[in-house]
Length: 66
Image (cartoon, rainbow, N blue to C red):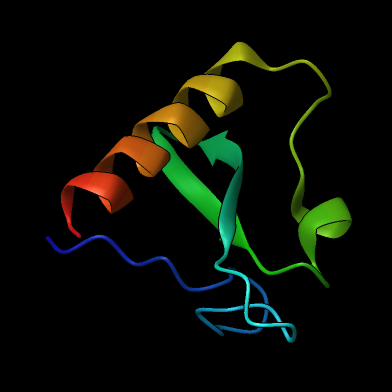
C-alpha cells in the first residue's frame, strides 16, 4: 500500500506556504500527517517518542527519494 503524506484533515500534501506535511501522531501503527494549519489539532501527546521516530524515518525516506 503506498504511503499517503496528505494531511489527515484537509487532504493537502503541502502547507499553504509550500512546506511539506509532517508526521504529528502515530495512531494504530499508522503515521498521521498534518499541514501547518492542522498540526496542533491532530498532534499526539507531547513528548511521544513514536512520533519523533516516525518523523526521523519520514525525513530519511524523503532524502532517499531525491
